[in-house]
Image (cartoon, rainbow over all chains, first blue to last red):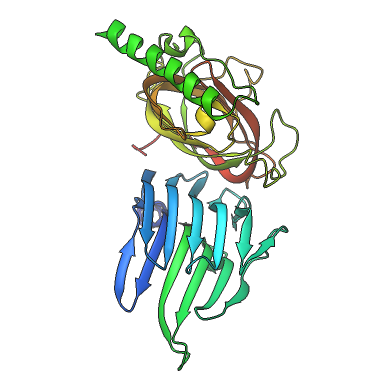
Length: 204
Length: 202
């Protein structure tokens, strides 16, 4: 009887300890030929809480120019209900030498579980007045939309990547603009630019 | 000291009005009164035995759906917060933080970023009073406007943040008032609000 109680107690303790959240958000990340630059990052502790990363302006010539970068991530661990939600916003964006521009880029990544279900959600992510290769994009951009950028490479817009097993863990990363820089002759990847990134995950 | 700070805020508010007026005389702007520097609100509700976290986006106003606003309007806000009582009942003191970013250029200061520090946490006293899914909190914060105004110790109140269902989109809702120059109240168009048991520090 005592042994059963101890085993149950141990399993319960393990279940509680295994619960965790992650959250991360940032405005811009640039890697050109190995030279890395990044705006302030909001990183959520695995036990929950809140973190922010902000900058009034951020620029890397030829790669990205942006203003009002705001990244926020919050979350909490609880046996009844656990969640993490991250938001990244960037305004007056110009990327890839002006091939992509937008008034506002917003990434929202939500992960959660309750007593009966869990999941992720990227709803709320979007562009305000997006222009790609000089053409205004008036419709919502579907997840993982690829567009070619002549002389630059290509970009994945509203890039969404899921993580977790869907049973005990759930996670999602949203990169609203992910430019892959390519060598014009060889086609080899030479770098990348990410603008508007939010990610979150939960585990029980 | 406090009077000097209030005077500074009042002068800043007047300057902000003048700047806004010079930038766009055709469109009406919300007025700023001395109430902008009114004393911090006090917790009027009952103490709460839970904590709240949340983050996401609000577009529509007053529960009129949760669709995204038109791109031309820039009419939406994003936010993130954590708030909790500082101890078990009965005190209504609270702790935590909130970030609120308003994008509508017709709002105060042409839009703004607000960073608030939570000083009280209670059950709601507005139309959501009695709804156990909702909490109320507030305090003071710093307001940075798009037209380069900065205001310190501005009172704010989240009169309710409600965890209705998972996920929060189309379900959870929040109402915030900042000074007497800004209010937004709506259903989440992105993100989530969660109510948690009052355990741990986060």
